[in-house]
Image (cartoon, rainbow, N blue to C red):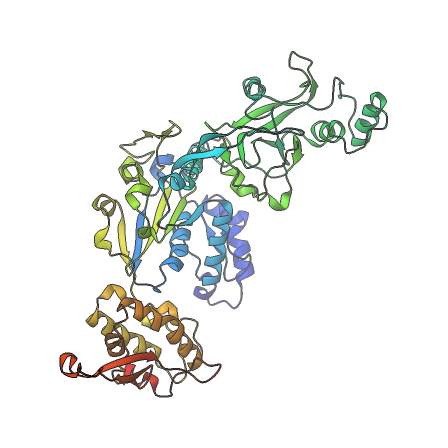
Length: 560
């Protein structure tokens, strides 16, 4: 936009450098902007924070509860991506490609979650439920046994927890800086059977390793040195032995400033800390656990949480560095506190997308969320409300920076059937077929076709069962249109009209069965001519030539 306004030609790289440069910050007093999209191009968008002298509560946006509803194929699910980007960033990139790229980034970072409701979707999936556990013991050589039911958070509660942490981070200033820090996974005792080791480490602000024997490893600052020292007492030990490998990682590879994630099983974690001191040898009462490093605990959740920042299950090894290609640092940072600076920043925004929201029993799925999602009941709002959850017994509220977007197919279930309490808590935006964005196709006027077809459907049935424009968006040729009509539209009309082919033919402008359909007269059984009187017909979809979906050349004349 700046390029065009100033009458420049392809000056995007220079413009981008100027907007992001120190001179811009000096002249305006603004902080460095956040970039969205491809760098140094016409698709680059810069987001500036205009005010920083207000509290976190003042600069939070009003929480959005929105449902996009309309007939099938009107782009409701597609539109949720644009809505999510707008809610998270406050601005949507101009190009569709840049918008989809930014949406993917937000999903990867954990700021946007997408779920599809269905008839079996339940409160236990969305908020929290009891899940079977066969033991959570871990560590090399560990094994688990037994069976028990444990409360585990659902997808919405997990996102609400991250969003609330982001609110607290905003109140403390800039997000925790992970730049240049390695991230390690560690086990602190066997989860479920040695929890006293974990609790002692939390209380004492340290991490502890159970491998390495009763040796003070302070003088040994390389893998080779650790290997040689262990073999003095245990000649012939292989270099892959846990006492050597684990100790080398803990003593040599781990550095002050690195981040350590304390695991709970292979898919959850129970603490995150920052290494603040060198290796220490501390003999004590706890057998084998003699090796420590000081830690500043950054985040200790009330219960073990899902690892949403690492794209692999944790292994049973006690200590190892997380592989960078599987680590999402932006998602990890969402779990960490702010820098502690005096400046308050706008909290990161989060979006839960519930596709096909009316296909589930919404009142049952949402439970107490029916009350908690009201804007004035959110965490940080004037009438903040929390409830005690039934399974975990934890206090729970919905933060103000968590938005909910739902989609509703009106052909499946009318909006009128929704719970009144739910309708009051959501804004509804209708999305109807938009013929103006249909492509131009030789030989077929798609705009006229879809307009006339939907007018007849509305006359014969209702407006909620129209055909959406998305069915035809990929059409480039007449055979493409024929294929959509044969494979998508005709089966949908048969469902709408419950196999009443007379009405289907009327909607298609093919009452005589000469274009899309074929009509043959059925002869009345002997002796029943007077009882049933009048002609009856057998209807079928007109068969194409072999290997083709094409209809007759004049098939669309009745829809012109």
